[in-house]
Amino acid sequence: MTSTMQFWYPVIFDTDEPFDEPRVKRLQGNIYAINICKEPYEVDVETNGYSYHLIFGRQTNGYFLCIPNWKMGCELASYNDKYWNTESILKAGQISREAAYAISNAIDLLAFMLK
Image (cartoon, rainbow, N blue to C red; front, side, top):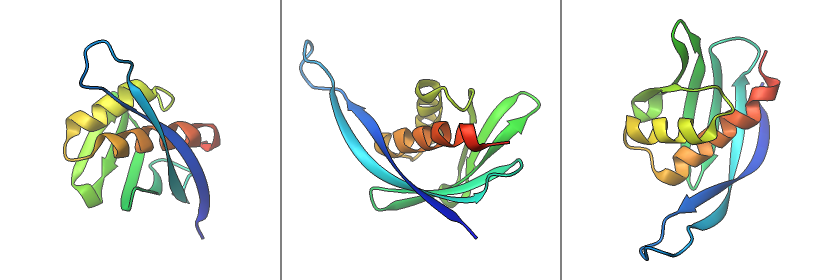
């Protein structure tokens, strides 16, 4: 049985003008917890019409994230380091900026529930 959690997350967009402030947009997503009792953790994150099946946890050299349905994986900092994790997800491949923000925020929200 999976449990569902709705969440809101910010997405920061740069502007084209050099001295303009970045724009921040608030978007909604859903987290479907599949396994948050033991590592590796497994959840589905849905946002902006797409689904991301996350498998994440600890390994010898730190934390990792795999998203098999998007054929990608990357390293994570601590679960709460949204900035570093967003950048790592973006560098790993074909995930949009909005999705990277959603995934890093979802992992941060789940961090307090993980054992």
